[in-house]
Length: 190
Image 1 (cartoon, helix red, strand yellow):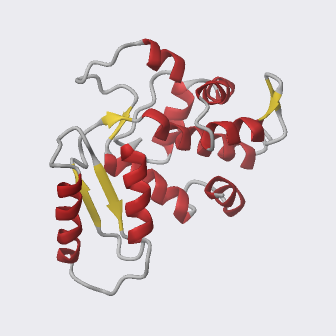
Image 2 (cartoon, one colour):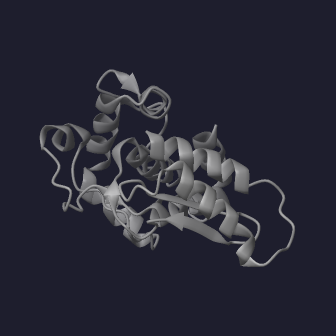
């Protein structure tokens, strides 16, 4: 959860208008982030300046367990299928509408809702295939949340992981409209 909070804070900070400066302008931010995390190698952070494209990261190319951040990819994949007419947000899945499941998954971090949507999409392989088709690399979805939680994690296990840079890349592609049409993008960001 610390990774999610820090990513969100840094993305908001960097999304503010920035003067055209050399990439070195992000060095103080990188140093501040290192100090905040205590130089802990078990914490990864990446942030992207949406105007300049400059990126700052700590352990940005190292895979970390995605935990609930996987829910963004699942939601984006579902919304992509809505765009192509394969699904709707009104579809009833196990007694709840897709929009109710999305809200439970994204706002309340409901793991059961996540697994229901993931299963409806065709499972982890389907979402991974969609990410690969969109050239998202460094992010792996291998198991459902229930399977992930029931299997103790070996720190060398790269399943169900993302590098901080890959997660920022996914968020930037969603924000820029490269992966979703404006209506779906707005829905997800709201």
